[in-house]
Structures are given as structure tokens and as C-alpha cells.
Image (cartoon, rainbow, N blue to C red):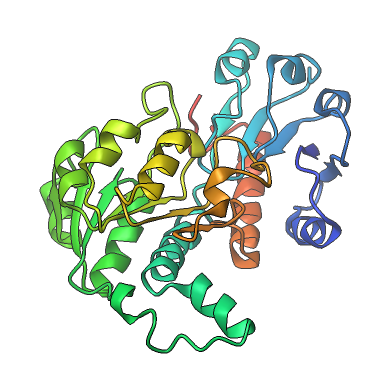
Length: 315
């Protein structure tokens, strides 16, 4: 069985993937600069993270049996083209949920404790033992607003409760009462959540309905002391509106792991702001998570090879 991995990963990452490869499977990893369509002709399975899987790529893969996304955000896959080709698309929530939820709190605490200004000043010989106190905050008692109470949103809620946060959430469908009780979560409309939350964290997929979900109007509803966290997809946020809101003091800060264009240009306005903590789409990027993802992804391919339906199928 030929697996084509469409991500041009570095050798150390490739080595971890190879360690997880089942017996009887062969792996071909795309190299930097290679056209994806040029290497999929013998593929039984495509493994993909961020590389676009277009109709052209699908047309070049006549043997294809499954597109396995190694994460949960699949806006880079032409699902309609896959459906026309009769190729299922499946996700890998394993290895994604926990590290992303942990990364949310890395961003929150970095903003709340002014980590970047403090570390930078220390390296420059400035000792800010007192200078940051009036603008540093505890998490306990803060209202954590979760937009999207799916797998990741629920893990964020559990960790928020451990920190002593009050949990409010919004979603297309209200969670069952037992889930709300377990998480200590209160349902609110998006407008009410934005107005009430000290922290707003986004956990919804990028679709035509959610693109630009947080724009100028939504940012205007947030508190001046509130912060916005986005570890989902950059397209959920109007970045120009966010920049204006941050510069004007309309909100206090933002923690971003994703951008509308990835990688963003080095002169991206948001990257110049002291009240922004940014990371390069690494929320799920740990060695532990990679091993778990690969094990689950390859297990799903084995299911399909055995004639079974793939798990976590989206199309």
C-alpha cells in the first residue's frame, strides 16, 4: 500500500512518521518544491495537513482510496472534488485535541503575565520586577468564553475550570445538559459571550459561514480588558479589524497560532504589536501528538485496506 505524505517535512519529523508506518505500507514524502500532482500517481492513500488537495491532485491519483487529514481542519481539501471521485475524506482528532487545548493556555498566560516583554527586557539588562504588575493578571475568576464546544472546546473548558475560570460558550447547537453540568459551562449567544467574556477563544472550523466570524462589529462588543485567542483557522478573524482594535485599545491583546495567509509576511502589522503573542501554527505540533496522529491515521488506512468504513469521515 502506497501512502503519499503531501507535507515536505524535515528529516526528524519524517523519521517519526516512518516509525509509525504499519507493515506492508510504503511511504513517499513530498520534497520541497515538488508539485503534489506529480507524485500521487501510485498513491493508495494521501496523508495531508496543510497542502491543498485540489481537483488536479485528485485527477492525478487514479488508485486513491482515502484522503486522511492528520488534523481536524480540512478547508485545504476540495471535498466536492473528492466526492465526485468517490474518495472519502477522514480526519484525525487523535493527537490534536489535547495539545491545542494546552496551547490555548500557553497563549493566555503569555498575555496575562506579559511573558514576551518580561523576557525581552531581562535579556536587555532591564529588571521589570515591579513595572508589569499593574497590567498582569490571574486566570482564576476570569470568564472564559469558548466559541465552539466541540472536542477541543470541551478540553479547553476542562482546563479552564482547573484554573478557576467561569465557563461560558456558544455553538450552533446547545450542548446536552449533562455536558454543561460536567464542564460547568453556561450557554450564551455569540453577542452575549463577546460582551461578557474576559477571554474569547475560537474553536470552530473555517467555512463560508464562519469566515470573518470575528470582525469589527464583534470586536467592538468585547471588553477593553478582554483578549482574543485563535488556534483554529486564521480566516475566522478579520485581521485588519483586529489590528485596529488592538492599536486603539478596544481589546487588550490577542494570542494567535493561525493567520489568514500562512506563513504571514514578516512585516505583518499584527506581528509588530507588543500586545500580540504569535506562534507559527504549532498548537498541535508536539512529538507526542505526532506519534498519536500517525498511529491513528495509519490505523484508519488499514481499516480502508480491509474494506471497512474509515473513522471520522467528513465526506
